[in-house]
Image 1 (cartoon, rainbow, N blue to C red):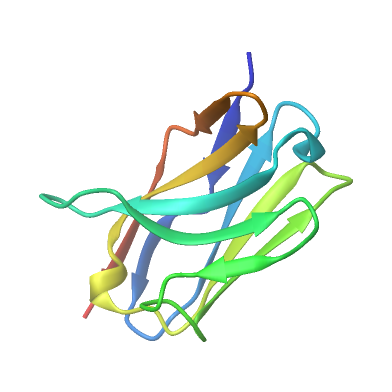
Image 2: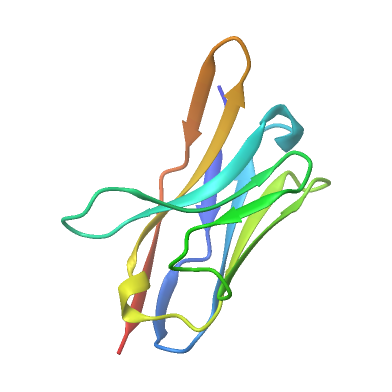
Length: 118
């Protein structure tokens, strides 16, 4: 059973920074890509950023230039560095890992709360 464990959430003022971590219970090379999603109260879960096993990155328009996704293969950990945070970034952030072969499997962490005060 694969586990993804997020950490690093918290309360921060607008303009501040946080770094989220997602530790996997096995090699992150086993995932075709890993990413971050978020869900604000009363809203659907939305894509934030993703990084492939080859290191290619993709970002939602709302976070481009402010957030950076990265991976440490030796630690089997994916990070999300969030700078210039805005109140609208407030959400529960979820780590996602995808295995996409003959069938697609999505793995999710339990989520970590990020609250940005104005």
